[in-house]
Image (cartoon, rainbow over all chains, first blue to last red; front, side, top):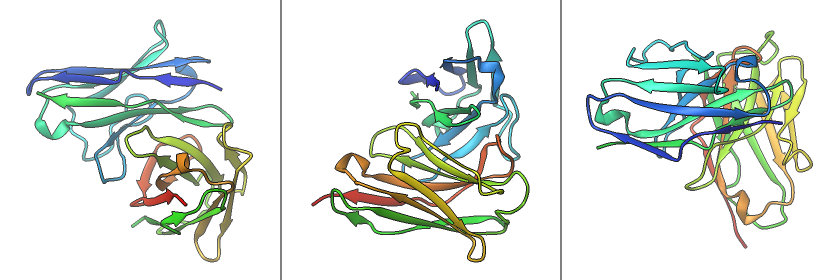
Length: 110
Length: 120
Protein backbone atom coordinates (compact mmCIF):
# COMPACT_ATOMS: atom_id res chain seq x y z
CA UNK A 1 0.00 0.00 0.00
CA UNK A 2 1.02 3.60 -0.43
CA UNK A 3 -0.08 7.09 0.59
CA UNK A 4 -0.27 10.45 -1.13
CA UNK A 5 0.32 13.50 1.07
CA UNK A 6 -0.83 16.99 0.12
CA UNK A 7 -0.65 20.29 1.97
CA UNK A 8 -3.89 21.05 3.74
CA UNK A 9 -4.25 24.48 2.17
CA UNK A 10 -2.60 27.00 -0.12
CA UNK A 11 -3.54 30.55 -0.99
CA UNK A 12 -2.51 33.24 -3.43
CA UNK A 13 -3.77 36.41 -5.05
CA UNK A 14 -5.46 36.59 -8.42
CA UNK A 15 -3.01 36.58 -11.27
CA UNK A 16 -0.34 34.80 -9.23
CA UNK A 17 0.96 31.25 -9.53
CA UNK A 18 0.40 28.50 -6.98
CA UNK A 19 1.82 24.99 -6.80
CA UNK A 20 0.26 22.08 -4.93
CA UNK A 21 2.47 19.12 -4.09
CA UNK A 22 1.57 15.46 -3.77
CA UNK A 23 4.21 13.28 -2.14
CA UNK A 24 4.09 9.51 -2.47
CA UNK A 25 5.19 7.30 0.39
CA UNK A 26 5.57 3.63 -0.46
CA UNK A 27 6.76 3.22 -4.00
CA UNK A 28 8.05 5.51 -6.69
CA UNK A 29 5.96 8.43 -7.90
CA UNK A 30 7.19 7.66 -11.40
CA UNK A 31 5.93 4.09 -11.43
CA UNK A 32 2.26 5.02 -11.84
CA UNK A 33 0.46 7.95 -13.38
CA UNK A 34 -0.86 10.77 -11.21
CA UNK A 35 -4.19 12.46 -11.82
CA UNK A 36 -5.41 15.77 -10.39
CA UNK A 37 -9.06 16.54 -9.71
CA UNK A 38 -10.83 19.77 -8.88
CA UNK A 39 -13.67 19.42 -6.40
CA UNK A 40 -16.24 22.08 -5.64
CA UNK A 41 -18.92 21.70 -2.95
CA UNK A 42 -21.99 19.97 -4.21
CA UNK A 43 -20.38 18.86 -7.47
CA UNK A 44 -18.58 15.76 -8.62
CA UNK A 45 -14.82 16.03 -9.13
CA UNK A 46 -13.48 16.98 -12.53
CA UNK A 47 -10.10 16.13 -13.98
CA UNK A 48 -7.66 18.98 -14.49
CA UNK A 49 -4.54 16.86 -15.14
CA UNK A 50 -4.22 13.18 -16.04
CA UNK A 51 -1.26 10.90 -16.74
CA UNK A 52 1.05 13.25 -14.83
CA UNK A 53 1.01 16.11 -17.32
CA UNK A 54 -1.89 15.80 -19.76
CA UNK A 55 -4.75 18.27 -19.77
CA UNK A 56 -8.29 17.27 -20.76
CA UNK A 57 -9.91 19.33 -23.45
CA UNK A 58 -11.57 22.34 -21.95
CA UNK A 59 -9.08 22.75 -19.10
CA UNK A 60 -7.14 25.97 -19.60
CA UNK A 61 -3.38 25.79 -20.11
CA UNK A 62 -3.00 27.72 -16.86
CA UNK A 63 -3.13 24.26 -15.28
CA UNK A 64 -0.03 22.10 -15.57
CA UNK A 65 1.31 18.96 -13.95
CA UNK A 66 4.77 17.64 -13.27
CA UNK A 67 6.60 14.84 -11.50
CA UNK A 68 9.86 15.11 -9.53
CA UNK A 69 11.49 11.79 -8.81
CA UNK A 70 14.06 13.37 -6.48
CA UNK A 71 11.32 14.33 -4.03
CA UNK A 72 9.05 11.46 -5.05
CA UNK A 73 6.26 13.91 -5.63
CA UNK A 74 3.92 15.27 -8.25
CA UNK A 75 2.84 18.87 -8.52
CA UNK A 76 -0.10 20.80 -9.86
CA UNK A 77 0.70 24.36 -10.89
CA UNK A 78 -1.97 26.94 -11.60
CA UNK A 79 -0.79 30.17 -13.13
CA UNK A 80 -2.70 33.39 -13.65
CA UNK A 81 -4.98 32.51 -10.77
CA UNK A 82 -8.66 33.37 -11.11
CA UNK A 83 -11.28 33.49 -8.42
CA UNK A 84 -13.04 30.60 -10.14
CA UNK A 85 -10.03 28.38 -9.38
CA UNK A 86 -10.93 28.41 -5.69
CA UNK A 87 -11.72 24.78 -4.87
CA UNK A 88 -10.31 21.62 -3.35
CA UNK A 89 -7.72 19.75 -5.39
CA UNK A 90 -6.95 16.06 -5.06
CA UNK A 91 -4.12 14.02 -6.49
CA UNK A 92 -4.77 10.35 -7.22
CA UNK A 93 -2.62 7.44 -8.28
CA UNK A 94 -2.63 3.67 -8.21
CA UNK A 95 -0.71 0.47 -7.91
CA UNK A 96 -1.63 -2.95 -9.20
CA UNK A 97 -4.18 -3.56 -6.46
CA UNK A 98 -5.56 -0.21 -5.37
CA UNK A 99 -6.26 3.40 -6.15
CA UNK A 100 -5.39 6.14 -3.68
CA UNK A 101 -6.43 9.76 -3.31
CA UNK A 102 -4.40 12.36 -1.52
CA UNK A 103 -5.94 14.16 1.42
CA UNK A 104 -6.86 17.18 -0.68
CA UNK A 105 -5.68 20.78 -0.73
CA UNK A 106 -7.98 23.75 -0.26
CA UNK A 107 -7.00 26.53 -2.67
CA UNK A 108 -8.05 29.98 -1.57
CA UNK A 109 -7.80 32.85 -4.01
CA UNK A 110 -7.30 35.90 -1.83
CA UNK B 1 -22.60 10.57 -24.31
CA UNK B 2 -21.51 8.84 -21.13
CA UNK B 3 -23.64 9.27 -18.04
CA UNK B 4 -23.66 7.60 -14.65
CA UNK B 5 -26.15 7.92 -11.83
CA UNK B 6 -26.05 6.57 -8.31
CA UNK B 7 -29.17 5.37 -6.55
CA UNK B 8 -29.95 3.84 -3.21
CA UNK B 9 -31.21 4.68 0.27
CA UNK B 10 -30.51 8.08 1.72
CA UNK B 11 -30.71 6.81 5.29
CA UNK B 12 -29.53 3.53 6.78
CA UNK B 13 -29.30 2.40 10.38
CA UNK B 14 -26.08 1.34 12.05
CA UNK B 15 -25.18 -2.32 11.42
CA UNK B 16 -27.38 -2.46 8.31
CA UNK B 17 -26.12 -3.29 4.84
CA UNK B 18 -25.99 -0.54 2.22
CA UNK B 19 -26.71 -1.36 -1.40
CA UNK B 20 -25.93 1.31 -3.99
CA UNK B 21 -26.53 1.03 -7.71
CA UNK B 22 -24.67 2.87 -10.44
CA UNK B 23 -26.73 2.94 -13.63
CA UNK B 24 -24.77 4.04 -16.67
CA UNK B 25 -25.19 4.68 -20.36
CA UNK B 26 -23.00 5.55 -23.31
CA UNK B 27 -20.44 2.80 -22.81
CA UNK B 28 -20.15 -0.94 -22.34
CA UNK B 29 -18.57 -2.44 -19.26
CA UNK B 30 -17.41 -5.33 -21.45
CA UNK B 31 -15.18 -3.12 -23.63
CA UNK B 32 -11.50 -3.82 -23.05
CA UNK B 33 -9.92 -1.58 -20.45
CA UNK B 34 -13.12 -0.02 -19.14
CA UNK B 35 -13.69 0.12 -15.39
CA UNK B 36 -16.26 1.54 -13.00
CA UNK B 37 -15.12 2.61 -9.56
CA UNK B 38 -16.85 3.69 -6.38
CA UNK B 39 -15.49 6.66 -4.43
CA UNK B 40 -16.93 8.40 -1.39
CA UNK B 41 -16.51 11.69 0.43
CA UNK B 42 -17.61 12.10 4.04
CA UNK B 43 -18.79 15.61 4.90
CA UNK B 44 -15.80 17.92 5.23
CA UNK B 45 -13.34 15.14 4.50
CA UNK B 46 -11.29 13.84 1.62
CA UNK B 47 -12.21 11.64 -1.29
CA UNK B 48 -11.74 7.95 -0.55
CA UNK B 49 -11.51 5.21 -3.16
CA UNK B 50 -13.61 2.14 -2.35
CA UNK B 51 -13.70 -0.44 -5.12
CA UNK B 52 -13.60 -1.06 -8.85
CA UNK B 53 -14.81 -3.58 -11.36
CA UNK B 54 -13.10 -4.14 -14.69
CA UNK B 55 -14.44 -4.99 -18.12
CA UNK B 56 -13.42 -8.62 -17.57
CA UNK B 57 -15.23 -8.77 -14.18
CA UNK B 58 -11.98 -8.56 -12.22
CA UNK B 59 -12.42 -6.62 -9.00
CA UNK B 60 -10.33 -4.61 -6.56
CA UNK B 61 -11.13 -3.30 -3.10
CA UNK B 62 -9.78 -0.75 -0.66
CA UNK B 63 -7.57 -2.70 1.75
CA UNK B 64 -9.13 -0.97 4.75
CA UNK B 65 -12.69 -1.83 3.72
CA UNK B 66 -12.35 -5.02 1.71
CA UNK B 67 -13.99 -7.16 4.37
CA UNK B 68 -17.17 -5.07 4.12
CA UNK B 69 -17.41 -4.39 0.38
CA UNK B 70 -18.73 -6.34 -2.57
CA UNK B 71 -18.88 -4.96 -6.11
CA UNK B 72 -20.83 -6.67 -8.88
CA UNK B 73 -22.15 -5.81 -12.30
CA UNK B 74 -25.19 -6.56 -14.41
CA UNK B 75 -24.15 -5.97 -17.99
CA UNK B 76 -27.66 -6.52 -19.30
CA UNK B 77 -28.91 -3.63 -17.18
CA UNK B 78 -25.78 -1.48 -17.46
CA UNK B 79 -25.46 -1.40 -13.70
CA UNK B 80 -22.74 -1.74 -11.11
CA UNK B 81 -23.78 -2.52 -7.55
CA UNK B 82 -21.81 -1.84 -4.39
CA UNK B 83 -22.78 -3.42 -1.10
CA UNK B 84 -21.26 -2.35 2.19
CA UNK B 85 -22.00 -4.31 5.34
CA UNK B 86 -22.08 -3.23 8.97
CA UNK B 87 -22.72 0.43 8.24
CA UNK B 88 -21.51 2.91 10.87
CA UNK B 89 -22.17 6.65 11.31
CA UNK B 90 -18.59 7.18 10.09
CA UNK B 91 -19.74 5.79 6.73
CA UNK B 92 -21.98 8.82 6.24
CA UNK B 93 -20.78 10.24 2.95
CA UNK B 94 -21.59 11.16 -0.61
CA UNK B 95 -20.96 8.09 -2.71
CA UNK B 96 -19.88 8.48 -6.34
CA UNK B 97 -19.39 6.07 -9.17
CA UNK B 98 -16.87 6.93 -11.86
CA UNK B 99 -15.93 5.68 -15.32
CA UNK B 100 -12.44 4.97 -16.55
CA UNK B 101 -11.75 4.32 -20.21
CA UNK B 102 -8.61 2.34 -19.48
CA UNK B 103 -7.25 0.35 -16.59
CA UNK B 104 -5.07 3.01 -15.02
CA UNK B 105 -6.75 6.03 -16.49
CA UNK B 106 -8.42 8.92 -14.82
CA UNK B 107 -12.07 9.17 -13.89
CA UNK B 108 -13.34 10.98 -16.94
CA UNK B 109 -17.02 10.73 -16.06
CA UNK B 110 -18.67 10.77 -12.67
CA UNK B 111 -22.13 10.33 -11.33
CA UNK B 112 -23.76 13.20 -9.49
CA UNK B 113 -23.21 11.48 -6.15
CA UNK B 114 -25.62 10.03 -3.60
CA UNK B 115 -25.63 11.19 0.00
CA UNK B 116 -26.02 8.34 2.45
CA UNK B 117 -26.57 9.10 6.12
CA UNK B 118 -26.04 6.44 8.75
CA UNK B 119 -28.11 7.12 11.83
CA UNK B 120 -30.45 5.34 14.16
